Amino acid sequence: MNKEELVQKIKDAATAYYTGKEVMQDSEYDLLIEELRAIDPENELIAGMASDETNAAGYKKMNHNLVTGTLRKAMELNEFEKWVCSHKGSYHCSEKLDGQGFELVYEKGVLTHLVSRGDGYTGFDKIALAKYLNIPHTLPQKENISVRGEFELSNKGFHTFDIFKEMKNPRNAGAGLLNKKAEDLTEKEIKAMGEIHFFAYDAIGLDVKTKSDLFQKLEELGFKVPKNKVCENYEEVVEFRSELAKIRGTDEENFAIDGVVVFENLLDAEDQKEKIQKKAIAIKFELEVGIGEILDIEWSLSGSYLTPVAIMTPMELAGVVVERANLCNLNNIQKLGIKIGDKVKVMRRGEVIPRVMSKV
Image (cartoon, rainbow, N blue to C red; front, side):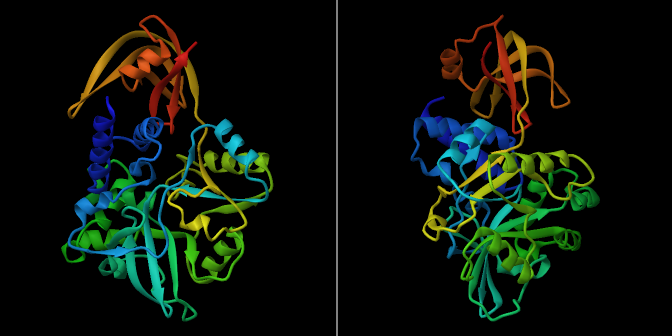
C-alpha cells in the first residue's frame, strides 16, 4: 500500500481501538507504525494521535501539563543492546502496562482534572469519571503536581463481569468504559469501574532527581506504581525482563503487561518534554522464531485493504501451531525476494501476529 493508504489504515485502527471495537492486535498496529517510520520518519502518527477524540463523549478539550507521548520500541534484544551502548549509567526498569494513558492534575493537593492521552499535548478532561475510579482524590500535602500513568482493568475484573463478554481483552473493555459519559454508565458498569486501577509512572512538580526516587515519592503520595527495579547493566535488565515474562498467562498476572520500560535513572527535565523521549525505550517480550516452507500465498481483505498472507508448513511458536504468516504488502515480498516454495523465518511479533521476516 502507498503512504496515504497506510496512514488511513493506522487512523482507522486507532479510531476502532478507542471506541472499544478493536480491528487488529497491538503487534499488527506496531508493524504498521514501523512501516510508516521507514517511509516518513517525521510523521506525527509515529508519536501517537488524538484517537480518543472520535469518542470524546462531550468532554472538554484540555492541554496537558506533562507531555504524554510514546516510547521508542525495541522489538528484539539486539535493538535494545544498541540503545544501551549510547546510554550509559544506571537504568530504571518497570513493567510496560497495556492500558489507557491519562494525566491527573492536582491543585493544592486536590484532584481537579483527569485528562486523556489524546495527541500527547491535548486530551479530554474526564474528571466526571473520577468518583468511580481507584485513584487518590486528595494528597497528603497541598501540592500542585501533574501525574502521568495508565488505567488498566484487572484480569479478574475482565473475567468476572458479564458486560465484557463481547470484548476481546481487558484493554478494550477498560477503554470502552473510560470513553463513556459518566451519566450514561449503568449500575454494572459503575461496579466494574472499581476494577480499573491507575498506575503512576511520571510526574512534574516533585523534588526528585532520579526515576527510582520518583516512583518512591509517588507511592508515598498514595499511588500504585508498576513493578520496578534499578539495574546497572544490560544483563540485569534482561534478567528483570525474563522474570516478568515468566508470569505472563499465569494466575500471578493480575494486569496485562507486554514488555519492560527502561529509562536512564537520572531524570532529564528537558527530555520529559519530548513526544518520544530519547532517554527511554520499551522492550517487547521475547520473540520466538520458527522456520517453515511457503506452500501458497493468499490475499486477505480487511475493509478496503488487501494483505498478502503466506500459507505455511505447520510450526509451533510459543505453544501455538502456526500455519499462516503476514507478508505485510507487495513491496515487502519483492524486497525479501520471497516466492512459493521458499523456506523462511517466521516470528511472532508481540507474541501474537506471526510475520515472515526473511528467507533462509
